[in-house]
Length: 142
Image (cartoon, rainbow, N blue to C red; front, side):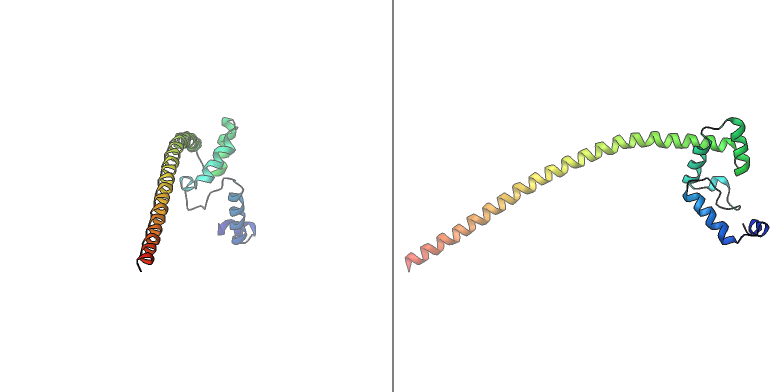
């Protein structure tokens, strides 16, 4: 990066900011010259797959040369993206099932809590009535 900055007459900080902005916009950019393309983060790999989705073989080769990639890498990243999306749908149905079971358990616990609250309230009312009854008897005896 410092070599490019000195060749172009741009500060290193400016180049780093431009790289950061490009990544935030979803443009596939390498992290630095020290990291290989396999070290790119998932968002950059996915951006490369999206950018190359409609390219011909010749355009893909040119793109790969510019980015320092191989077409096989793009193909692997594309397959991984598809597999991830397919796995998400199966996870989605599994998570829906787990959510439904959790909701049923919550409803069961709510009913149980409500029943216990009613029983507690009834016990408290009986205790109060018992104390009042004893107080009445004590007043009559005295």
